[in-house]
Amino acid sequence: VIAVPRVHGLHPSRSRTRIRSRAHTQQDASIASLIKGRVLDLHLDNKWLSSSDPLSRCNAIVFALSPYTGSDGVVTIQRKGAQANPQEYRERILAFFLTKCPDQYNMHPTKDDDNAYQKQWASLLLWDLLCLFSVSQSPEAFDSLSHCSMLVTPGSDNPRPMTERIAAIVKPLTDFCVAQPAGTPVVLGCQELPTDDNSDVWLESVLSPMGLKCRRQVSDVSITTGFIHSAYLDAGFVDMSTVLNAQLTEFLKSLDVSDRIIGTTIRRAQVACYDINQTSSGDPYYVAVVNFHCKSFKKLTGVQGKFMAKAMELAALLVPVEGGEPVKEAVLVGDMNLEAPWPKGTNPEEQRKAVLEAEPFMIPEGNRESMAPFGEELDKAGIETFPPLNYFTTLKLRTRFQAQPEKEGDINCSRKDFVFASTNVEKPNVMIDQLLVGGRDDATAEAEGNLALLMPSRLWPGDHFAILAMMTFGVNVSSGVATEQGAAAGPAAEA
Image 1: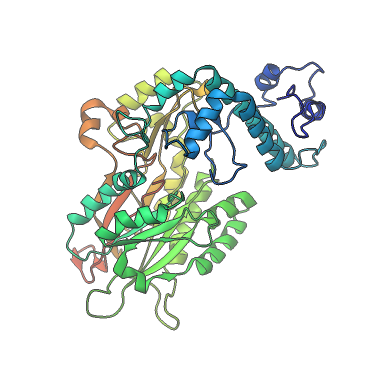
Image 2: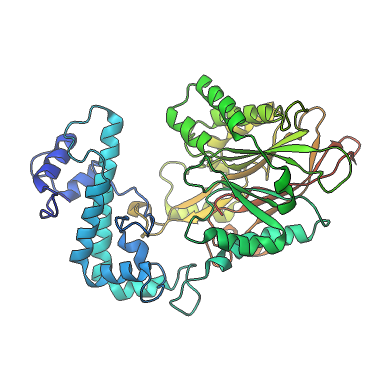
């Protein structure tokens, strides 16, 4: 990075000076020493950004491990360019960073955050150049490796159709709904909805035959948050995101959390009120469903638990019809991104052993401590998590092709995805009749151990399980008598 020739205005002397001034290193610092000293780092993910932008980020490994898409496809062009003409490809990489990198000539940032942000850009540039070198040196090896991808149709170079992948993600919901009485209302909170060209067409082709519809969160600029719900519920859909999110923002400010936590949490929070009694006679029966994608609480799990308890309290007070009554019940769903870190110094072999020896579908006992404050705050509020807190919903293995090479073999066994219901209050109004973890092959895991559930796979082309819960509302749980029936299923986070 420091010694690249001048390309379209990139001045190596300025790059060298800027990095060295922050590092306080000797004048002849090498790239290797900057990495070893953590001035530059490779702890960055490979991302496949919008291919329609001619100045998209060009990470050669992302394209080299992707399937071919035909002679004029973007992936094929990127892939062959990286393999056959690395010099030209390098110029494309540099052009991207020259255009996109903020404050590229700011020699003395005034804030630590600015310094960290710019350091990340320099690290990302270094990583993309190193990926290009690897691909250009061994094109045949990457061609072979690409056949292992769950994005490739087995036995070919062809990409697996998007409709096929979406159908695989939706299959647990299909099976779940078939087992329920006809007309059972379905509500699914979703995160990371596909945004590729024609993705809405693909979604409709899979969902429409099931009587389902997708409604994206319009205030989320990335439009990856949304609900999938029974099509007949759409007429009675009341979006109350603006109302509840304003209240939740003020509550987060009272907890004195960072602006980053507030921004990332609220931006992807979607709030909907559904009349689940549309197909029956009688008065409307509104249920509020709040769909979250919490990305930034990190170690503040107790604070996050307080936030979720408050969200349940406020959602239960929402009034979907002006001058009407509050909703009958509130349900929270979504991705909490809870961390279940390994004890310091746990190597990959020890991690594998712990996952294999853990009870089926459970996070190893030694990794649960950081999540405990989250559960404690929910217990105080009478809120139950489904499945129970210590079950994992993500099980991933780091490979050498991620941008954290020293973590190769590390296992991420953690809890991300939840359905929350107020079933532990004095007079509960809801009960969970049935629970399904979609994408989890229970029989195989019980026979071969938890590592058989590593994701993504061709069976489950996602990196989070889907949590599906059948609920009955308006119940006297102590007597088991339902006064008003309805059901909701969710969430399918990271689908």
